Amino acid sequence: MQMINFEYPALFLLVTLTFICGFVIAKFIRYNHFVKMAKIRILRRQQNLDVSFYSAEIIKNCVQKLFFSANKKAKRALAELIFGKTKTAEKFLAQKDKALSLLLKAHHDVKLAYTELKKNKKIWKNNIFYALLFASLAEKFFDYDSVRSSLKKISPKKLYGLNKALYNQISAVIYIRDADMLSASVNASSALKYFQKHDMPVEEAETYLILGEIYRMSCVNDVAQTMIESAIKIYEKFSLNLFEAQAKAVLGMLLVFGSRIEEAREKFDSALENMSLRQTKGEILNQIALLEIADKNFSKSFKAADNALEIHQKIKNKRGIALSMQILAHLYNNKNMPRKALDFANKAGELYLKQKNFSALCECLYLSATVYFKKNKFEKAEDILRRILKISEKYGVNFHHANAYGLLGLIYLKKNELQRAKVLIQQSLHLEQRNNRSFGMVADYANLALIENLSGDKESAKANLKIALEYALKSEDEELINLIKKQVKD
Image (cartoon, rainbow, N blue to C red; front, side):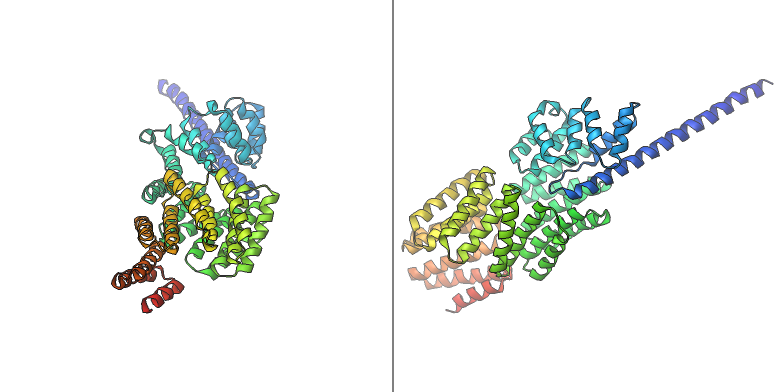
């Protein structure tokens, strides 16, 4: 009788535990389903944004707070959030976590969210995860000073998990700007492994594109292409048409650098297909303009750059305006219209200076110096080149440093000051060797050969031309190879 009395409570307890476990499992499945729905619906809505920000963890945190709240307003906000509508959730979450609310807002209004976060640093500065996402937002607007200052306050040794992956991803972007490709590659690869392991496909695709840029700048084009194509596959899988188009445009530019013009043109055409977003369309048109320059279709390039400029001016996209003007400056220089070339180069340079894009500023200054050099206005050209040297010394853009020394050498060659010209071109060559730039080394060795020839040292001239030919052959540029071969023959 005592055993019977014991069995009934045990059976009741078992049934109760089974019911509770079933309820918890069902609730957990429902919660996960809501998280997945919110992520994909927000991504779908982002296909109407030129500039977008995405954090799977922020969306998950927002769903979690709303799902496990008994508040009726929270339930309403959750119902809207799982369909990609964030505004009600933002209002509810702002009462307890303003930074979380703004980071959710960033998924549909990046600029406003970033501006608010920048103004109210006290609401997120003590949260490492939020600080990393702020740095990611700053990078979207090319505010690299804010990116660097945010990263400096974080000790990477104390990071683990998602925070470590985000830190590595953002650091990779900064290392690219600093031309430290080895560190950039190590950091990006580490971030990629985490995103792959934890099923974060959007962040994974973003990192593939970063790696694509690293390998492109390292001239490993086949690996760069594999990275970009991996990102495209992810975007195709989730039907993220805008992200796919933007990645195809990136691949198009890589193919341009590899002189695969027809393949590049196909990628750009595909990216432009049904593209209604004006900023993205303008950016792709700028890339098409660069492609047509590479293919020597200057009239087509002018049309694309002019259309891009019109679009960017209408929407007041200053970065797009600067690039369009820079391309047009090159085209006017090619048309032998120096006034127009200088005007557009100066306007583009002023915009780049305000944006603190010193590399692009140096490119515009170098173009202006080239125009003055052609007009034999050597003093003006030299003043501009000296300015490039100061900027590149301060901000570490060796690529432009070498170019400036090279053109300075040619100025003194024109003045028949051969020894000074030789020293300047040797300085240029040293920098080109350090950065392993084949095209730059070809030009410098060819110019040194010219100086040695004018100085009467025929053997040294021949030796330098042979080295120039070796580097020209590595570049696989037939026009350049034939030019150096002709000089060797002569």
